[in-house]
Length: 188
Image (tube, rainbow, N blue to C red; front, side, top):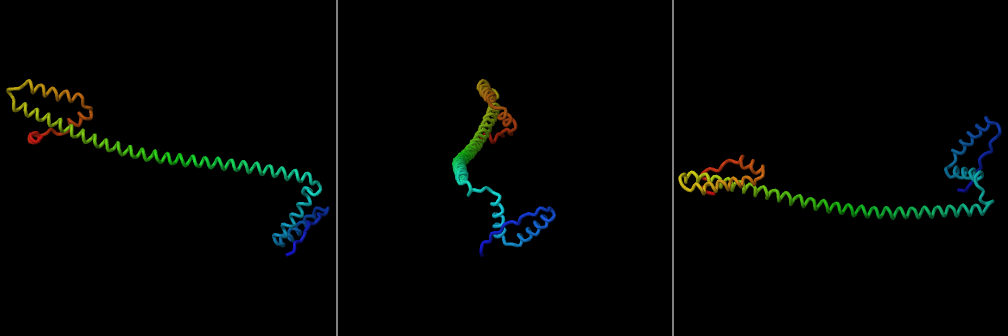
């Protein structure tokens, strides 16, 4: 397809006639393919635009300015890309560090839970042992009603002293726990 050079029509002096001519020109332009419309627009624009052919020095200066601006923008974009890359690397390192810290915290929590279970088991065992000793002392007191009062007093005193070093939670458990029966004392 041959390239046509189309120029916009000159506007007449009369305002009413100019509007009708503009409308007719717009309809004729809309009927043309897009390429012809683009050629028409560029021809109309460059007739009004800067005349670089007349002043070559000005054209070269503008081209150099545009090249300098493009270079500085490229450098700025490269610096921004480098900063973004380092920020991304830093964020990845921080994410890995946080993941490691979370794993360590989970392991520590598991160890603490295991230690708590062990402590609860030891507490239960010591409470049962204390109750067994107390029940055995009461049994011995009943069997030795006439003799050995000094030793019985001493054993009773030792149990009372042990109670003083127990925590309030341990004392509450000790009082809440059922007393051992005589057949359980004999087996203990």
